[in-house]
Length: 168
Image (cartoon, rainbow, N blue to C red; front, top):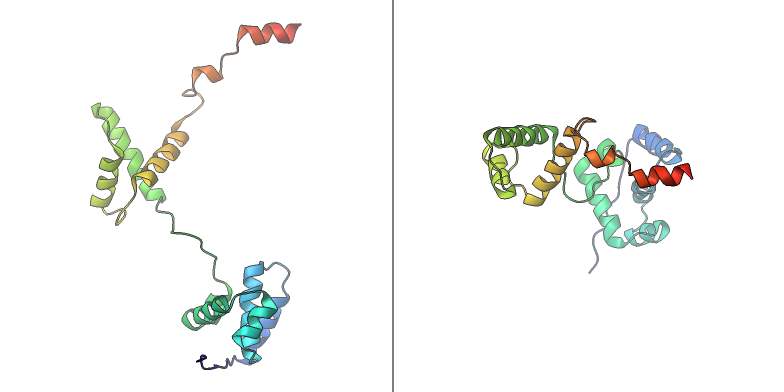
């Protein structure tokens, strides 16, 4: 048993915008496919035909049509592609981690990753956060903290053996 065929009707202004959008040179393949799915839908092509023409699966064409129905014309065409979960490492969270680690260092205490993660949740910066995310954030925070004066000494000192080889 197949799905009912739905037709799409766009205003003349939207149709003109869609045609200009498809003819644009700066579109990614994904954006072009999204726009062409709308064109095929307006031309009453079946999902099967549209998928074959664009090299997409039937499920992908259905999901694109569903996304259009939910998002609307402009939002659908200009949607930013997302992959994976959004990053929880925000500038506010970086500032909090910097503050927490500085306070702990001043008191001479060491904080575990799980303790920091719990504190982040308690303070309301995230609903939940993984210790791996905290670890990555701390690496990033500590990496930005290093200045030229704080660079490891081994980076500034040359081996005398290297100097001898260069002289020869």
